[in-house]
Length: 20
Image (cartoon, rainbow, N blue to C red; front, side, top):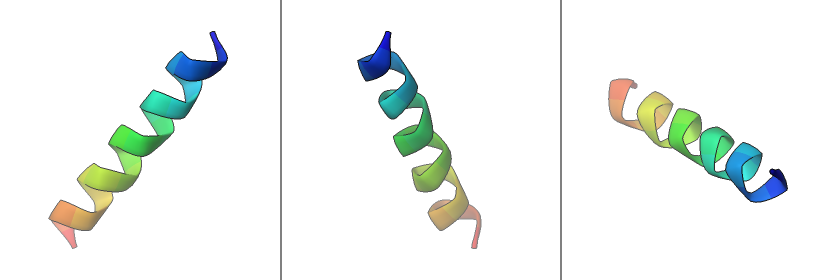
């Protein structure tokens, strides 16, 4: 469950970087 949360955060950060 923790890994899934970290993966979700990583995905959000990656998306934010791409959108910036």
